Amino acid sequence: MTNQRVWQYRFSAALIATGLVSGCASVPNNKPFPAPAVIAQAVKRPAPPKQELTDQTLYSLLLAEIALQRGQLGLASRAYKDLLQNTNDYRIAERAAQVALGAQDADGGLAAAQRWLELEPASIQARQTVAGILVSKGNLTQAKPHLQKILASEGMNVGHGFLFLNNLLARHPNKAEVLRLVQDLGKDYPNLPEAHFAEARAAWNADNKPLALQALDVALAQRPDWEDAALFKAQVLQSTSSAKAAEFYNAYLRDHPHSRDVRLAFARFLVQEKQYPEAREEFKRLSVDFPDQADVPLAIGLLSMQLKDYDAAETYLRQALDRGVKDDDAVRFYLGQLNEERKRWDEARQWYDAVEGPQAFNAKLRIAGLLAHQGKLPEARAYLHGIEVTNNQQRTQVITAEAALLRDAKQYQEAFDVLGKALEKLPNHPDLLYDYAMAAEKLDRIDVMESSLKKLIQVKPDNPHAYNALGYTLADRTTRFDEAKRYIDQAIKLAPNDAFILDSLGWLQYRMKDNSQAISTLRHALSVRADPEIAAHLGEVLWVSGDKTEAKKVWDSALKENPNHEAILGAMQKYKAQ
Image 1 (cartoon, helix red, strand yellow):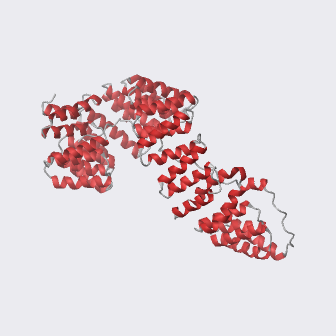
Image 2: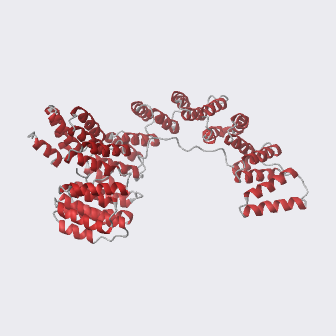
Image 3: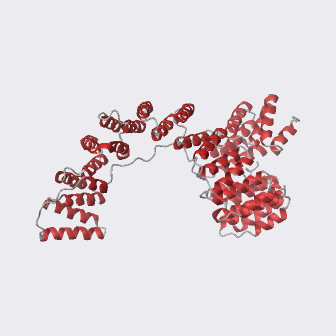
């Protein structure tokens, strides 16, 4: 069994790192009710009541505040409760509520907040506190009249109040009850798009997607250019149908072509759907509309790399650097990879040499690979030996990189020896054990491979690749099929959607002469990942099963993307299919 290519760059991870394809569109953070300081300016507080400052009152105040400074919240809360019983000052009630809540005393906080509201009935902050505590205690019925008055007090800002509702109600376990409350609160505001948006969020949380879409349609009819509502609708649609989500994105952007957030979400969506050419076009439109954005050309450059449009990739990656992209070392690293793919070794090295910071170590490993590709294996090994390492993980990476270069040069014994020597110092290192096992397999040392993988399983029993490698080897190189199946089954339990593990299962089924099931499993593996080794296996099983035309089609298709791949050419040569 062969390893995945050591130097392969991770396209999806790179795009995610830009922040531009970090997941499907999500509901933006909503603005809360106006902060207390704003309310304090908007509503003049009444003059505090005239009250004699007795020795007992002063003592209780000092006791409470000193307890607070010392972190004795329980004592402070009790002292303020005593004060509240002996005063009619709304400021004491407010402070008592704050301290009780800080002490995790919801009942005490509610009593103090209700007293505060009684003493200062015009205080929206007091009413918010009462409502918030009631909601946290799960009492939506009692909270409802307070929420109604809070919304009514918002005036022109009532929309913000509705946007905050679902954040306030998010922790209530009965989502259906929350939905009913939000709908009741919205009845007085039929022409307010935020009220319908709040209903949509509550419906979504209650797993009522049709109602969520219905409410969003009303909100968008009332406010067609509202990007937040459009993003939310796309999210709801995407959860049920990618096709409907794409249709909505296209329609919305046709009517609102300069909606940056929606176009960005659409581009992310297309990346997730692996529609890379279409995603690149959306990012290009964003680049025109927002010429100062550095992350947009970075995303276009990475998509162009994926599409093997290397000229465009270099143009946009350089543009990202010119615009001051945040992680410029990562972009230099991508430019090194890009030129490496084009076999422009000198240019690739210049970019790798320019990488600093956390990426510099990996850039040095790539430079060794460049030297090996140029036929300078001794120089590449010497370069690796000269890399300064700061810990065992980096030391191991250098060793495994050297072994990989030796394997690529078919110097299997040397690779085996390098790894064996390293294991003398780090006998339980998982990466060394795995690579040592792979090197042993190349030398037909199946006994060493088996013992190394079994030791790896002891060291890391949750490593699916160890089980898979052992199971595949037993299936491919021995007739110990029952044992092979146990290992592969365990690998599948740990990583059920791993294409290479599915490939191992399909190959085992073929070796056990269950060709029909093997074809089905290998087709599934190839659909998960278009890997040439999986294609080689599928083609072989198809050929042996008598479907030579389909076998040739699978092999030829894989060769277009991976010319001269050993596994495919070996299978074709085996059956004289070239």
